[in-house]
Length: 466
Image (cartoon, rainbow, N blue to C red):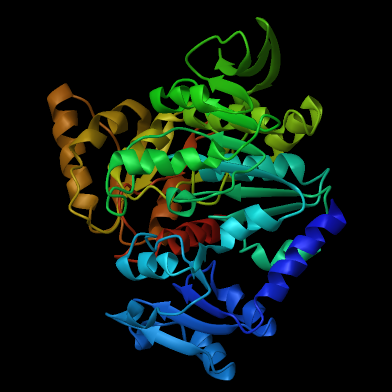
């Protein structure tokens, strides 16, 4: 297998010499391609719809160094003529007229991630879904990495195409795959996971149907030896089972399945012919919420043929969550602190609040995206013991919460602060042993920070200094 796949990669590399190659989109996945293809003596042209002054200066320096042809700005695809291979970025639609014309004229349309699926010599596990795919992918990687040499890529991790030559047949590639990456994909992973499917990214996809069809590509090209993991509780993913070519394992948090992996009575269990084996209690992990229990179920199903239950449990217990997504940071004086900076809307903060049974000290507020904050009032009153507000949306949140408190004749300690530093200080003063301090802003970050990642890292820095 090793020599066969090295041959496949060598043949592909040799085929690129003096070929006209287009790279469309200078995002994360396509950057490493430039040097790789240049070293194979391909004739490269890069295309991007951003104007040249908006392109990363590091990339421009690289393009100048290698004297690579460029086409930027409004009519950036007007020079897409006479190419042998087109590498498109995930966000670039495959059906743009210029691309369709080139494909009709014989160009091969592919992507960095499709070539990983086509040319990697080892087992590939792919995860997609509308929610939970990052956590599920990361969990799978954590479960496997102690026993196997693993490569994490796709929507997270690093672009893996340039790593294929290092891979061995006994290694494992773990990929998070978005609907954009899966559109028109002609290869499927050996083990595929679909966490759920709900309306999403309809600003890029032409319809919900197209979005669903893109998700299906994660298993459409599997064979009878392959494995598909599906969410039984989601109508669409449950239907996918009918079209599977290989074995299907279902997971559920709502039904006591006879076969599969379930979450019931706060315990994740594996089921075979109606016999249930307890695997792990959710309270013994750093993860919170039914949605995370489902992610654990999916990860256990995907890795059950590769590691023991004991190895799964050990890795799950150690896993602190994906950065900025209800991420456990530290316990201080008996209170556990969580970073949920990803929560840039009320709905995400509501999910965060519902993930805990403990009393909560909530830090919220940020940039105003003109969202409706009415729905957050009730969950705050039901779950929060101290509310700390900051940023542009602090008055909006304060208003809806105060109205609801007045309506119910209740009181809640609420503090308004000017900065994240002040918010963290106030939270430490108020947090009691056994409580949760949750940083879940329900707002975007742009009033004080570049993005939610910078905001979350600042929060963690402040905690580590305490």
